[in-house]
Length: 382
Image 1 (tube, rainbow, N blue to C red):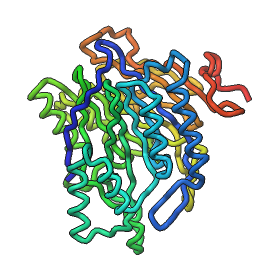
Image 2: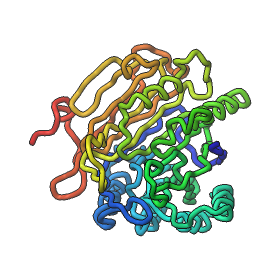
Image 3: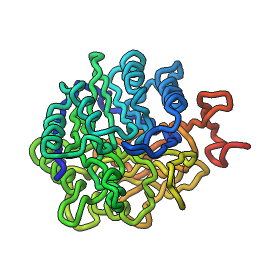
Image 4: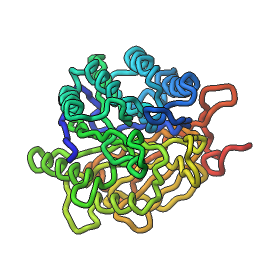
């Protein structure tokens, strides 16, 4: 069963204002190695990630409000982890949270990373050491998520999570294809009662017929609600090829937002953000319809979103599920939007709770260009 670890953070978002989120739907190009899938060209991959950081840290005042920065699963080469952390520490404003997936690493490398950031990950390190002592393979691949938090005092904290859901390698006879299954996720608690979590892709789905990661999260959030009247405000799921339109995702979302006649006050106001790779992504050995792209934000049915379909995004109710969804496309884009306030703070039925502030596309000479209003409606001109 997944262990949920509470972590208080010295992060202060503006009271009474929206939280602003930037989802970087960038391509990942992965190749198969002895330790899983890694970046085919680490330098080129880092340049793309750094260009996104340039946008957030640059002079455009419109991005000074970014509180939550989301990258896809498996996109950061391990060789550039220090470059990322240095850039976040030196250039990104305080009270900013960055969530990013690393390429696969060996279990012994994961342990080394946990030892390096032991101050923020003592429970995780203890669990990995127990697994290794129990006979876990040191070369087992680990699908890794990093949550880097720059607190309001300037300190950068680094939290690491390993994907806990079974890997597709279980379908092969070759044991080396099996992914190490993580045992923990963090429940982050900021000031002004803003609480959030980050998951790696399929951790959002059921683990097996008898236990569910999402069930654990709902129960944990409910206990927090009944004890303190706080809730889980945002859940971030970083992905690569998740097939987000799959029936399994619809069923989990429907249950999460109360379709199954169960009151779940701890997650009633949760915003679920899915950040995916773009359609330009490639994974060695993958065949068929990859379904990259389609990042999205989902909110409960108490909020109101009229059906809208534009070239770059749309609003829908996910085929009648008790929720509303902001659904993006598959191209390489930066999506900048706000997360809604609690429904009780502004219950007007005419108010649009999710607003897209801007969408950026890659510039021909490098960097990013903001799409105009006409391009949002009809798509970029060729």
